Length: 84
Image (cartoon, rainbow, N blue to C red):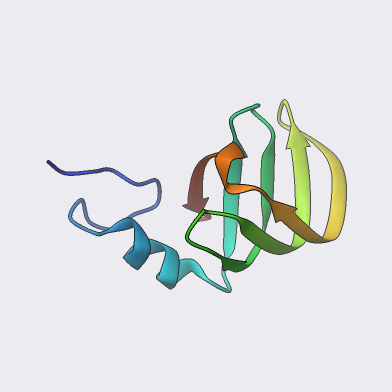
């Protein structure tokens, strides 16, 4: 079975490989609630808890807030993808 990951370059790439390649890069994190965060992926752990820097918060596609540092609990994450 092949898994598909947003922003992955190949279908055979493992999620951990993808996440290692995007550390320090700008990513988009979408939550189960529909809220989207765009910022630099600073670090993450095995539970998918995410720390981001220079983060922008979007609600319904509209910029609502900006944060210097952001922490997102992993169980709220729907997906992580890179920017183009």
